[in-house]
Length: 338
Image 1 (tube, one colour):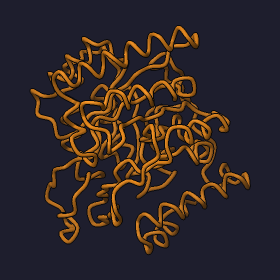
Image 2: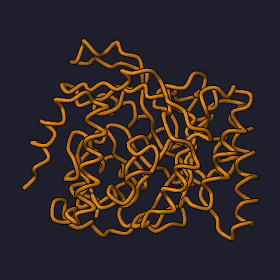
Image 3: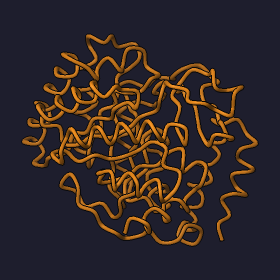
């Protein structure tokens, strides 16, 4: 019996950010009482080998839900094959002023302008070290808000070097709409300089630790076809290991929740499904199977996930769909894809 709709009805009575904190606390309690398997069932085992890693199944948690790595084991126990934590920055930062998270229930969507609020990379690394590592762990990195764009590479390298020994893969977030100027790093010389520097660091760290950790880039859904092509070429030229498509959107397709539609921030959930699917299709075509793609954006059902896989994605990630449907969605998708 799926009790999540009742749980969600209570949660949705609270402010979204408060509801998030409550749900994570309760999820942690369930895990510590060893009730996760009773409530959510056993994780679906349908191994997928991508990026040189073996994923227990193809369904992952997208970055943003567990920014500090506080709940890795509890989230893995929901059935995820991989959990991506972060976005983490070199130094702690509070993020944007509240309110900064908005629930668009009629649209099955969320708008957030969190602004990379996190406790810093040192805190996150300690949490990863303390986890049971019961699934693949990705770490999503970004730059601090007060770091200028010209020094952004320094922040990414600093975070990359600190998380490298502890991550199974590392995702570079250059597509959040909530850090001013960040998306400029998706283009031209700024992108090439960032990727070249990180690939150099990856080679050095690989030799130092004796293990190769894949480097992925997370891109926006608001790119034109030409921008996608240019970005794909840069990823190929710099031998990036993988792509995550897509982040949240600045655009506002016709929304039913008109009172909240004007809120600034990144839109996620069902309304961005068409544009996220389009970016994925163009990207897959440009990469021509040379770089694996993790699909995220508008996945609200098993059929949505299946469509992403059929388009050429290797893995999928959930965020908004997980909030609206709960752990049942993980097992539904894993069953559909197995």
